[in-house]
Length: 469
Image (tube, rainbow, N blue to C red; front, side, top):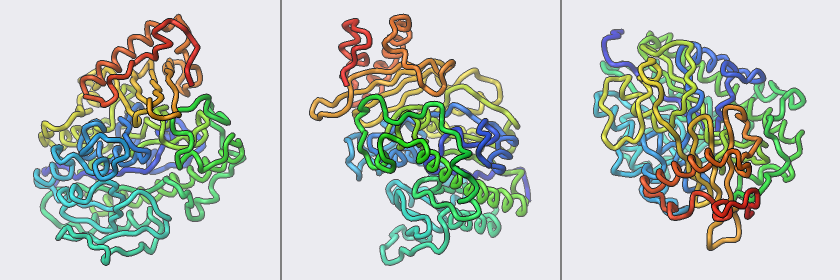
């Protein structure tokens, strides 16, 4: 095949994958040979942050951010809390990633999970197979559609997949790669539902990890130290509270099994590219919609703004990508869109909020963002510069849950976020600096909750350590 044309793109999105679940990037207990090889072949952005969401289903805004290149407050049609039609609908004023590549002459193909509105899917892709419009299901009974050129996707055409979800979506991707004969590059969107629960990896992966050999994370807690506003959400009820260390180890073992199983099938995608002669002209991106708690800070789910939830894996490999490179500067999930445009020689739409990471990976820039920001409903806000991080918690005026308090972490010395420095007057300058940046960002982004003080009133009054929970 000719390598003079634009590169193919394979965008792989995992579901619920923590940033530190890749062996080559520091997790010695997990087995991920395919992802390790991709890390060796390309550049890993080790501090990639999501921008949160206004619903407990954080996967919805996460995928909308990837597909619009926008912050979560701009990616959806609306900003009302838990108004599903608006929050699932990608902002029609923001051009989708698939649409941009389609208009640039790419054949766009999708398989797997699309947890946003169908209209945005229809305008993004010219082909597809084994398409799942939804959030989660049993992995062996995924409700899927074949690609419908009419865009109708009628209920009577929905069927149940006959394989485990990861295998089901991989089959569609590898078949597409092997049979592709078009005289133009392709954009393949491969969105897994793994390692999302139910964590029921098939053998031999289910038995790969013994919970007695799995370490508890350094920030494990039996219970979260205060009410973060989402203590009884569905994800937090997946394990009894207080958390039992043995039970949490079993959750982690099952989770690792799902990641290793997915890694195995990603290997089949890479092999299909190699066998078809397209690997050397294909950019492969591996990322996730968000991370997860799994016992860290006493939390199980994704409804929080700790790094175990809002940091995700991001690895890019392929032609022109520096090999075996680690980039530790803070970057954002919505940067993936303009980065892929840059790598493909396509102008990113003006509607994109993100920044291309190409100058950063090529050593031509020192940073992409001075600070990164995340939101969670009307309950939490976060700002970080990579060294310091502030999380602001709110107690909604009309409800009797949540906390009016703040946390401050020195990530450079405390990456597990175990030592809250917010009540220590020695760090008042850092707290006030980040709080000012958070407020400026909230105003600039028209955050619906920008009117709330960035520093709790009790802190403003100089009463240190007397938080309202």
